Image 1 (cartoon, protein in one colour):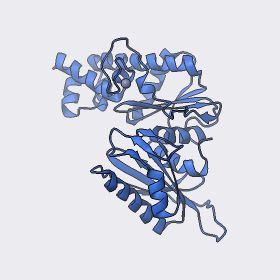
Image 2 (tube, rainbow, N blue to C red):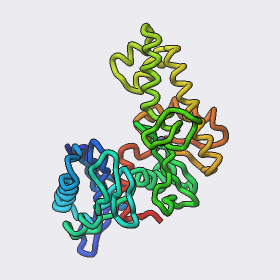
Image 3 (cartoon, helix red, strand yellow):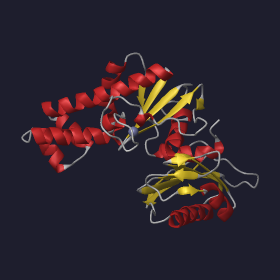
Image 4 (cartoon, rainbow, N blue to C red):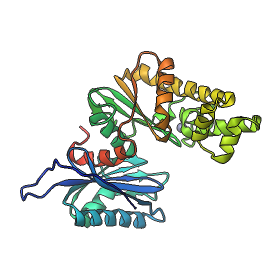
Length: 319
Ligand SMILES: [Zn+2]
C-alpha cells in the first residue's frame, strides 16, 4: 500500500548527477513500513505491507523483494532496517525477536549478498531515537531519553550526544525497570515492570476494569464501543469522573518511571512517542506537573521516525 509522496526540491546528487537516496525499513511484527529517504531527512515515498511471519526464509525474501523493488525505482545508495528484538549492530544478526521468525539470523549478510548493497540493521527503538535526537523532538539537546508508549514501553537513550547502546547492545529497555516490588508478572520474567502499569495497554486494561465496576459510566459506554486507550480520552472529554480516576492513576504510574529515569540520566529533554501521544496536549502538561524540573516534549517523527531513523543508520550512523 502506497502511503504518501513528498515533493522535494533539494536533491543530493552522486558523481553521475543522479539523485542519491536511502531505503529505510521499519520492520514490525504486524507491518513492514518502508520509504525512500533523502539525506535531508525527508521521506520521498513510503509504503506499508503485512509482515511475512510464516518463516525466516519468507521474511528474508520479503525484505529482499522490497529492496529490489525500491532499488529498481530509485537510486538507492544503501539500506537501513529497524528491527524489534535482540538485534546486534556489531554482527548484523538478529539473535531473537518475540514477534518475528528470526533466530540467530544473519540479516545483513543475507541481504548484502543477495543485493550487492550496504545493509545495516539496528533495534527499531534505537532507529526512532536516532531520528528524534538528530532531527526530531530531541534535536539540539545532548542528553535525551525517548519513551515510546505502546503495547509495551520502549526507549532510547542519548548521552553526551551519542546513542547509548551498551556492550551487550541491549540498553534502553526502560519498559522493564521495576516500579512495583512484587508487582504484576511481566513477559520478561520479572515482576512489577514499568510497562505493566504505564503502557497504553495498561491504560486500556484499567479502563476495562473500571467499566466492569461502573457499568453505567460514560467510560463503560465508550469502552464497549471501542476497547482502546482512546476510549478513556473520549470519556474524559465528556466529563466522566471514572475515566478521570483511571487517567490520573495512569499518569501517576508513568510519572513514577519518568522520575527514576530523570534521577539516573538527568536528561535535557524527554521525548514521548507512541499512538497514545495523539493526546500529547493533555498528557505532557499533566506529566510535567508531577515530574518536576524536566523538559518533556512530543516526538516529531511519529511513525516516520522509524523509517527515517533506519535510513539514518547509513547516512548519519550511530556514533
Ligand atoms: Zn518486564
